[in-house]
Image 1: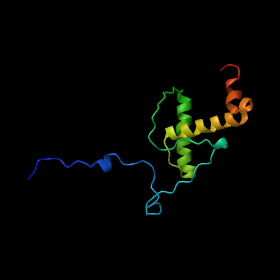
Image 2 (image 1 turned 45 degrees about the vertical axis):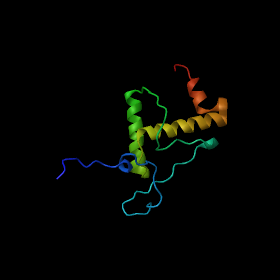
Image 3 (image 1 turned 90 degrees about the horizontal axis):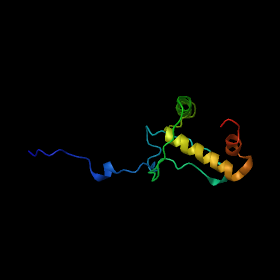
Length: 116
């Protein structure tokens, strides 16, 4: 009898995180509604390996709001996402609005508000 431990193979360790469509209707598979596409063709990058990273500091209230939004997406709409995905989608929406509306965009108006 060998004393070697059985380890998972490379296929299990480096599996893709992109949903596969060949078993989409299998029992127990969750169906997730597609998100609305933001204007100007921008969309969040979704669940994939990202090459760049930033650190963003948020207040306790902002973090709580983000978590509540994530939970509402799950409970009310059946969309299971992590906070990072919500943030990436929000960034895509704001940037699309900036591309489309320029000086009249929500981002420009909010950044021009006094007290910011």
